[in-house]
Length: 205
Image 1 (cartoon, rainbow, N blue to C red):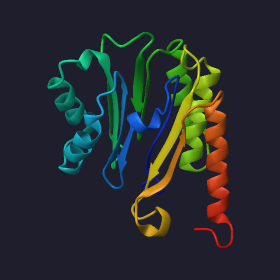
Image 2: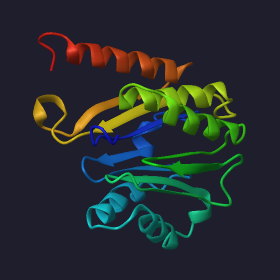
Image 3: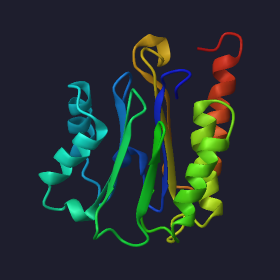
């Protein structure tokens, strides 16, 4: 988010607990989504490379070049400057693909088609309001466009800002998970609205 410097990821899948696999972010460094046949080592390794000054494109190239299963992987990276890069392996289950833009990337696999990522990118770039709201709105638009062709199950939202967690002890401004739900994006929206209201209330954290 260019206004706040926040970094974040929103994700939905027909997969239990998707947020614990896909979402990796560190304040003032970057955000990484590792998808498809996810290689979870991409998260910490990628953030370390970003912190060392590598560009997102160079990080994608490094991580995938040393991975024998790179054609089964999907990866999206945004750094603290808003630079973005992504990768979709040729062997990912169709439809799979994505796009990058100013300060964001969007990607998906096992989708009904490219209309899903198109709708997500369009909604993210044309929606007003707080950063988490725009990310969830992008998920909602992707679902309206057809979403995961297997259906829905879990969703997550991770937003980081330096010392923005409870008591200033972490950088997790929002770290919301819906592990198993018939309409997980709707539930994610409800949880976000609830946390935002609590945080803004007198006596809230």
